[in-house]
Length: 384
Image (cartoon, rainbow, N blue to C red; front, side, top):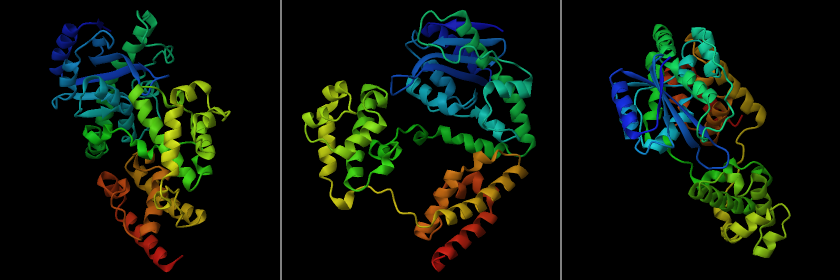
């Protein structure tokens, strides 16, 4: 296996120009994500076959535009494993909107395998290749990188082109290639990379279920402040305030810095740095009119009915997915199915925006999914 270490803009351009002529490029990234809001990119691995690989030092290269051009080139298929982790990082580094992405994890789910498989597991089962996983927890920002780190990074990407060939052939034989391409097209859209709305971040705060009314209004303001500030300062959210501290502040609602200092669960250093912001966020929450208080929402049906209706759809998903040798988790999770059921019982209407009712998923499940939804709508109207 031939692998070059790229530390200059000129070397990156030369490699990418050659790679663009191959029609395919495997890509992987190595990063550190501990104390920052965004992952810190250390290394980008590239390969078009086992004999042509490169490790790009993201800390040394100042102009990543050659890589951006290749990733955006529709004549080149981009091969990644777990692209949802790598593509947003590459988007921030070189500003690219990719086209023709082949995710080997998703691909596995379209040809009779499971999407929960690791890259090493997939290489072992499909190619008989065993990877050494000795550097899974390592500092990719250190320089120089050790020989073990370099070998690990190179092996991670070298076999992806051959794995792509194997999986592509299997997907095509099963007649799932069009659906797979449709699924992968999502990462070509701008909204795939949209950052979460700070105003909605309260919904992801652990423990928020203990609050209601004005308490939720205060939490919404506090969570929005934390999200925006963490993003602006590039700090991990817990380095500002942990979830339990947000909830505790929403419960006690400090109105002054002294009130903040009197709350044992708030770190003194956080109070000194962000106490004024915390007090202001609490005040905004307290001034929110009751009509604008957030709500966890009332369940339109009891838990037993929810489970029964969700199970009907999940059974259909499993049956249809098995017939096409698609991993059912790719079609829908229980949470997604329950969200669909709740939407029907809340509105009495068909929620066309739900993923199960669009694209390849709907093609897979119709017409049975239509009948189930009709029966649910009828049950809602009958009040049962």
